[in-house]
Length: 54
Image (cartoon, rainbow, N blue to C red; front, side, top):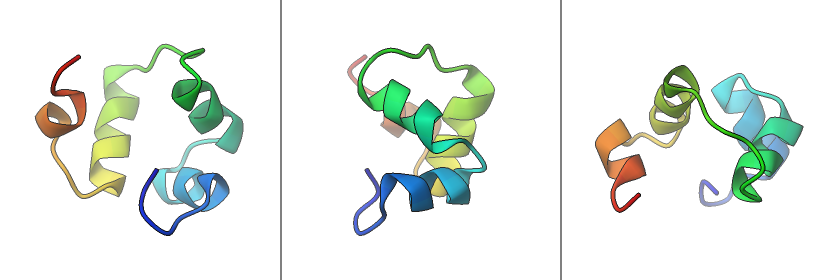
């Protein structure tokens, strides 16, 4: 999770639903490339850094 942000605040910043973020964290959701890009942008990182080691 982004340091200092609640799941709800992070989801809002990314333009996604909190339950979607929760599902990602728990490994229950498959994430589209579009949403990976949104998450990377919200975390101020690159898609390659976000997905490194997967």
